[in-house]
Length: 142
Image 1 (cartoon, rainbow, N blue to C red):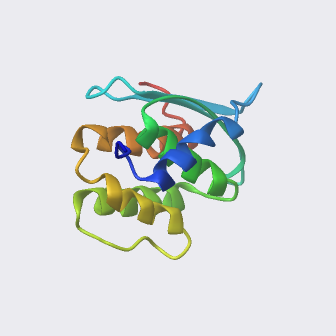
Image 2 (cartoon, rainbow, N blue to C red):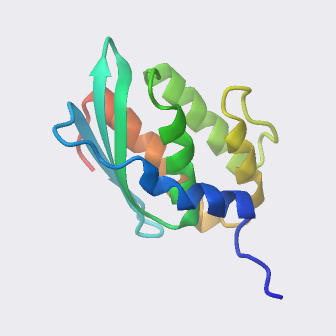
């Protein structure tokens, strides 16, 4: 029996990344790509009072990037810049080994402890958060 390259929880999250398709006529859009692995994500949002009202994305990434996109998409509605920044920081800390525990409102980030050894994919995991922050801030440059 061959071992899976990534933890099963990451693969399950990755499989769900298509559940949040890009929005037609979105109020804000941003794309970010990884220079390391070639992954890219385009986030489409509607924003009301500085918070995400609707969220969609187009993801072309490895399983780790897809999984991170799913985690964010499932919690995106209602978030503002500060909340997305805090979640991105928590994920970066988990990937870098600076933390072993995700914040209580982001339990699925705990699954990313299992991909620390795939350092070339860490940037892909952060792309959904980076693209979302860019869209929230109106920074559409890639």
